[in-house]
Image (cartoon, rainbow, N blue to C red; front, side):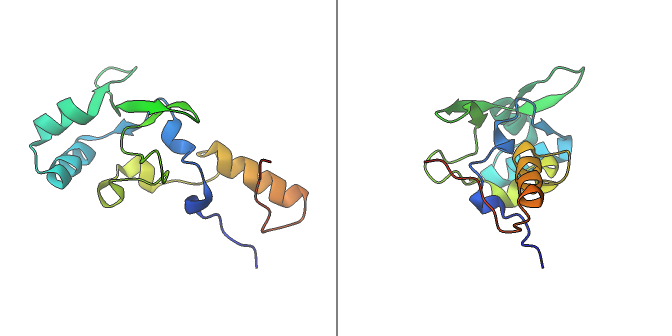
Amino acid sequence: MAKHYDCDDCPAYCCSYARIIVTDEDIERLGQHHGMSPREARRTFTRKGEDKGERILRHQADENFTTICRFIDPDTRGCTIYEARPEICREFPGEGRCGYYDFLTFERNAQDDPDWVATTG
């Protein structure tokens, strides 16, 4: 049986995407998680996106990807708001959604090794 991908092994690749789109429900959940109103959470944690009315999560500087979601712990590479994370984050990984997942899946198939993981040395 093939081993499924474990996001704990990833350096938070999808969290470096420039547009992590959030919904009003996501903003409300973030506000509740941080004990603030949705309006304050919207102002604090999001910014305008490319499309009209779109809100995206703010980023922070990152040594691996230049910038990354503000909720990633730079030392552990873990999500600091996992239980309150936006819906789009809950959908990852998956084919066509996560570049690292797609790369890993391709390499595992090409090498006929369901446990293969990229290493740097």
